Picture 1 (cartoon, one colour):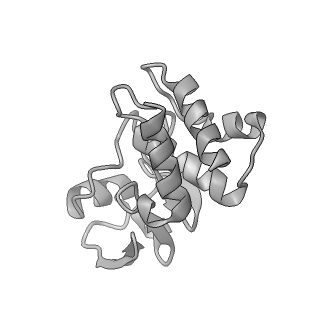
Picture 2 (tube, one colour; picture 1 turned 45 degrees about the vertical axis):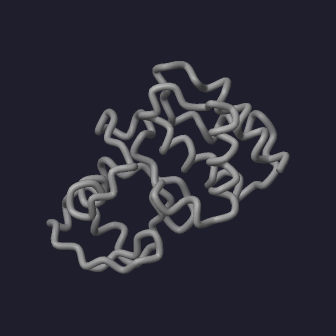
Length: 149
């Protein structure tokens, strides 16, 4: 199986039933995508798949064959992703940082699809993402800043 991740083709040796996150972290050593709950309920494992935020901790890697995958390691290669990351830094939108990669991925997907979303749309896009440290107000400020740029 071959996957295109962050613009690079990779020959995948893992079993096709292996969840994508394990292939990313264990086989490809891309550690930015985090395993939180392992149940697609916290959002820490989000990656972009053909530009859409997708949770990677449960879905088998074979489902992603032929699709363009962007992890947090590659997100700054896009103008929107770079803008989102800079806004997160400027607004100190991370506390412990565990959920941050998933939130950056979600915000990048949102702003790529809808460059000027309203607050309700922004909150809806972040609904699957859990931050136990309580950084959501700073995340919302960061997204507003990224929209304004």
